[in-house]
Each structure stands twice: as structure tokens, then as C-alpha cells.
Length: 332
Image (cartoon, rainbow, N blue to C red):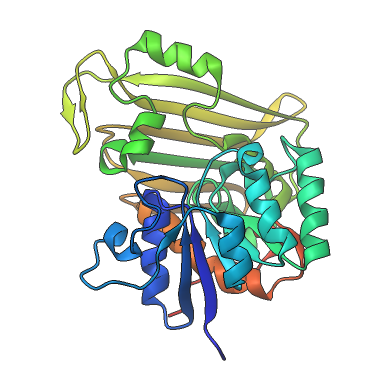
């Protein structure tokens, strides 16, 4: 069986990690890299991956030209959190019949907030013979898909609660900025009101859990609040002083008749103690899963993107969710 030919599209911290993993896998061959940043275009990928030897792969800025020339089996796509921002990127791949695994958070359940756009992507993917799916560590696994998979041992499930505690001080700079680390509370509130800030994908995670477990809900609610630091914390990128924002507390709830049947509780801030991921299923039997230390977000996101590639290539064309594919697994 020939290795799958892969292009890495978007070379930020997650894209770079994913490209490195592709290079490690015998069943995958990295054939191209795409990014529009002027300081990356034209450079050998080895420079961005801190490799000693050149890869022979030059970063290209013209995505359409690169995809048309290379015609890979699939693309690992890591460019933006928001579906409207990546619409044209996904359509280009779909029309060329190139499968896509995307880290775009709103791609987890694309029709939830963008039904018309989702229909357009699905039609293009079916017409072109491509499969498109969104995944990641969160959304895509820790606070949604794990709960669905854990239900395999249940006779019935009545309620779901997922808890994720992340020390943002161990994560990449873009994430620390996204959760407001080192901001004043006034700046945090202003950014929160403007939207597109904090954790993206909470609504999608609630929707995926409800859909995957057949829990009928009639409303999805969420709250976002700053976590204010009581002492100074220094990360490799910034310092959080006492009284400044260290990160966020984000709670999502799936409601049915006013009752919460899906609760997702995310704390992500610099200095968070006892990081962990937990899943609680109320039903028969009751299930409690705990990942001590928590799942390492940056590495785990890159890994799940790469581990999803074979299933996406094997799937029928169209816009999919992780519920439509076999559970991803490590394939050496």
C-alpha cells in the first residue's frame, strides 16, 4: 500500500507539530507545505521544524497553485478557528477532490452556526469527491468525543458532565493570548463583548455530545468569565501580575426544558493547579474517566489531526463530523 501524500496547510504552532508527526510516519509522506506569512514563504520546511537536514519542501504562499500541482491525498488544515474565514480554503480543496482534516473549531459541527455555509461545503465535497472533517483535542475529543465513546458500556445515559482544567502557562503563546493572560479585567470584558475571544467551540462540543448520545436538547447556553491571578506567574512568553487576568472559566450547557443534560466546564488559565480531564456519565452504569495531568493540548491536537487522516481518506465524500468516522487511533 502506497503512503498517503499529505500537504500541511497553515504552519503556526499546531501546524508545525502536525507536519513533524507526518514526517515520522511510514504510512504518510509530506509532499507540500502552505502558509501565507511572508516570513515563511520560500523557506525550506526544515527551518520551521528546527530540523538539522533540509526536507526539500519549500513553503508556498499560493494555496490553489500548490494543491493543483501536488494533488495530495489529504490536507492537514490549521489556519483559523472560524468557519467563514476558511470557507474558500476548504472549497478549493473540495473542488479538487482533496480530503481535509481541519483544526478549525467551528468545523466540529459546522451546521450549528453556519448552516448555509455547511451546505455549500457539503455540496462541493460531494461533487469533487472529497471528505472534510474538523477535529482537535478540544473541541473534537476531550470534552465531547471521549464522552460519546465512553458510553459504549452504558445501557442508558441520562446526563453528561465533562471537566477540563488546563494550565495555560504550559501552552503556546497564541493560546495564552486567546484566554486573555496578562490583560486587565476591563480589557478582558471589552474583548469578550466583541466576540471571537476565549475558547472557541464550546457550543459545538455541547451539540456533538447531545447528538452522539441522543440527548434531546432545546437550547445551548454558555458563560465566559475571567480568572484573576492572586500572585505573579511567568511563562516563556509573558508575565501575569497579581490582579491581572490569568485566563478563563468557560461553561457550556445543553438544556432540555430548562434542565441541564450536558454540562462542559473548562478552566484554562496560567498557573491552574492539578490539570486534568474528566468525563462523568450519569446512567446505567455510571462512568467516570479521569486523565491525570490532563491531555497535552498542543501535541494532542497535532496527533489527533494526523491520526484521523487514514479514516478521512477511506470515508465517503461529503462534509462529516467525527461521529461519522471510526474513532481515530494511533497507526505507526
